[in-house]
Length: 489
Ligand code: ATP
Ligand code: MG
Ligand code: MG
Ligand code: MG
Image (tube, rainbow, N blue to C red):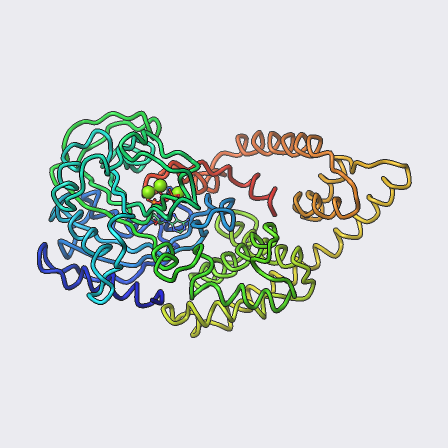
């Protein structure tokens, strides 16, 4: 089933529902909503925040959407896990003081288990594992009632996985997730009754999280961390906020191994194979990660430019710059030295443009911005490469085997040369890099920058934007911010 059909079925399931009532289908908001705590919209509920916070009256009691999301903190996972993109689409259903836990559980379970022929996902019940917050007996009872599963089949997880807040005083509540067991080749066997309170890391790939249901039911007065907060009491109006990963369901239903291999992303990998002459999934893990990074980053940078971001040295612009550069660099590491974005990005446009027609309408602008950034980066690489060659020749001539940290730092600082590119190129020359020395110099520079920033009052907007602590779905994120972004180039 193609991704477009999954999207269509999701929306129809909620729009046409007759048990709790039809949901208003709300188009995706821009990735760039104004929110002091978020760089980009990172969950389906973000556009509805004013309703959840009681700041505005919702024009409908129930809504459904497929929202564009960007999660910069997930960038390190891209291509390495099977399931994290920097850009993804979150399918959601929302109740503003209308139906609550029972309705949300029924609707979600119905969609995932309903046969394909009847408009659902047709996932085998024996592979599905609901999870509840360990301290939510109400949800446990409802899952048993709705699904007929025995209690031992339902995971009890702790606050880290299954308690949601915005990271600040305001609404909070327990969650339930729906996990899909991909089988023993993806992780060790497990006993559902005794898992938790945290999800073991070695099971994350096997027990794929597809859907998160948030039961917003209480008011928090203080949130010190994911696991340490004060509950004041029940909310006057209880809300539902759910998020299902479109790409995750797509890769299950399309019988693929991971989200980068689905219909709307794989053509970019195919194009990258053609350009590089290397094969995807031919036994070289590093190359496979690079192909996936390319597919993800080409798509996310295109979507960001589509919504109005331009490359820059801070905030949103820096995230975009980093994504574009990583895409180009990954292609280089795959052996492709020519301009790549003019080949790759139209492939992604043709797929994503089926849903987001602004990509076609605005293509001149989008492509001009992207290609200019590639050209600038190619220039950086050209000048940096000369300096790199000089440095390595010098090391070799003196019989050394280690490129000094100062050299790596200068390459980074003056030529914008990312450290992992330096590492990779040094390895090709049979050299190591004094990474400790490099990191020490980076740290010194950071400390100087921090001292500077402190001195300049009012210059903090950017840092605040990076502090995505109020990550709307409650994934406690620690974005290490500008410095790390620079590291990776
Ligand atoms: P995970 O634990 O896998 O990182 P999460 O708990 O951070 O996911 P939620 O905040 O609960 O994710 O978001 C709701 C749903 O959105 C998830 O259940 C998943 O299906 C999907 N999702 C979350 N992050 C990503 C991502 N980076 N790429 C693709 N899909 C995602
Ligand atoms: Mg999770
Ligand atoms: Mg979750
Ligand atoms: Mg996450």
